[in-house]
Amino acid sequence: MKQFWKITKTEFLTVFRDGGLLLIFFGAMLIYGTLYPTIYAPEVVRDLPVAVVDLDDTPPSRELVRMLDATPEAAVRYTVGSLDEARQLFLDRKIYGALYIPQGYEKRQLAGEQNQVSMYADGGYFLLYSDFMGAVGKVAGTVGAEVQIGQLLARGMNRQQAQWVAQPVPYAVDVLYNPYGGYATAILPAVLILIAQQLLLVGIGMAGGTWYERGTWRRFRDYSAVRVVFAKAAAYLFLYIPLMLYMFSFQYAFFGYPMRGNHIELLWIFLPYLLSVIFLGLTFGALFHRRESSMMVLIVSSVFFLIVSGISWPRQGMPEWIYALGRLVPSSSGIDALVRIRTMGGSLADVAPEAITLWVLTAVYGCTAILATLRRTRSLQRG
Image (cartoon, rainbow, N blue to C red; front, top):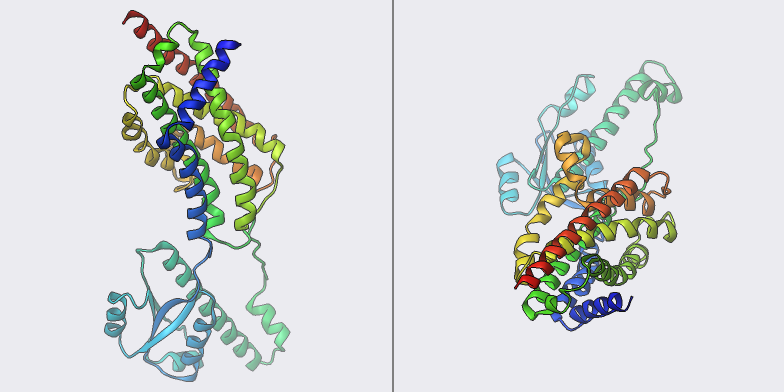
């Protein structure tokens, strides 16, 4: 036990006496955890500047424009006479979309014929495109329903009957787990879990390289590899559990993310998640001879980890072998489990498959960390 605490103390001193490691383990996590939510704090796009090309210029077409301007997503900033003018405004980045109303709009509406308007949106920004498209869709649907109701009233129906015919099946949309319908609530909790993994891997790898550069490994070359691995893992677990609880309690409350579940269940998932990441980091750390190697090798892996995690693309759209490969990365199962508990209010029983996967990864990467450490200590003994 004395050797165990000696190793743990040495790892603590390695972290707290190294400005680079402090920045990786604590500074970067706090900066990312605050900066990202602050940037996306508005959650949704509001008052997107758009232009209207109204070639009909009649009361019905002007009403359509007023309705579009009244939506929370769009703000009609320009009314121009041609698509060329709208195109120039777009190239000058003064607008991000345009609505085109052709001549004869009122005539076709009064004749009961099918009408048509065109929408042009900036497809380079998915959120802007989807919000503008949604705003135009709502306005067009509302105008179409009003026209149909007017025609039914002209045929002798009362207003209630006309409304029933125009919308025979009323529906309500309830957005689950994301009351704002916002980007931040949807994506940032998962991103923060992935960031925590990457910072742990890079930091532990840097600490392993620092041990080699400073000759610290030689002090423990006669120690049991199992004792070294578990002592170092205890140090990182002690450091990061409070930080993760801070991220999933204070940060959630401060930025208004949905908070369900409880801290006890979170701890039961934090434990295998952090252990699997720590053991994976110790595996790399025992292989690096220089602290810079951790940055060069592990930073580039973040893109792959992001892809296979299911944040940027849902599981249903992935090839099965890529999804299975992603299960080898702790963040993939960790994101599923932690978000379901904290954001969706799930229980441990609901995330049992993910929890089992994380414990299996903990065992596997624990073995690889021991083997890598054993290889390092034996090479030092021979040297």
